[in-house]
Amino acid sequence: MSKIDIVCGDAIKELSKLSANSVNLIIADPPYNLGKDYGNNHDLKGFQEYLDFTNTWLTEAKRVLKDDGTIYVFMGVRFISFLYNILEREQKLYFNSWICWHYTQGLGKTKGFSPRHDDILMFTKTKKFNFYLDNIRIPQKFYRSRNNMRGANPGDVWLFSHVHYCNENRQKHPTQKPEGLIERMVLASTIENDFIVDPFSGSGTTLRVCQQLNRKCLGIELNPEYVKNTKQRLEQKFTGFDSVDERMSRIPNDLNDIKIREEYLKNHEKWFLNNHPDALEKFYKKAKEKYDYSPTIDAKIKNTNTIELSLFDFMNEKVKEA
Image (cartoon, rainbow, N blue to C red; front, side):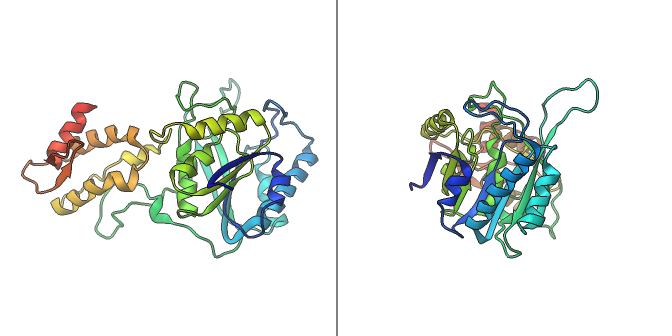
């Protein structure tokens, strides 16, 4: 298998071909059994049939997962409680987090409240699992010396916009997930060269994210058209992930110590906005509005012409470009 690979086939059969205890992370976005049309298959099983299908593929997922590995599973509201029961009581996995992905637009209702979230269950195979918090921290609202300058835990409510149909990265798939969402899971639960499996690859988002984050990844997809589209997506030039947590451009309100402020602003892009060039404009504008540096500050940043600028001048130039 190459570092990033996708196979066309049934998730259960393909998972059964993998060695036991060989996978660091599984990110699964199975059909929600809501009757969606996926081209060569229709997402509409009988109630018990769907539960049996879920239990079967999760049995294989647990088998291939390493003892320190993690699984994230997306699910709609109708079956989320049953999924939790299967993961904890049937598969004997260890619950860690119930993540709420909150999005800004969705199905509208005239009677009742319109849905604006999907659920993601995070379970681990054992109580000893890998979690890399420093990779996924978010900027804090206020800086305090006793706090970690590197940022705060993002919590279990994640705000990422849908990949709208006008987005240039939008694929021909009804349930495409935003790259920033998958990025957080990959960074939280793996390091470079770890092995990740997506049993329901769909639009190929997990593979695209792993490709850019230097992870090994296998995608499994039942529809050959989606496999073809994913391969084309993996060949496209990378210009940044298609979504970002809006909090990543946040700058602490009280960076009053000039040395601490200088260090923080120089590191912000590396810490929080790596792979998100589209979000840099907002960050640079906020930095200039909040902390208008004196040109005499001895912090040097090189621009693309290799001319050294003070941080003040660098911010000004970035705002002008925007």
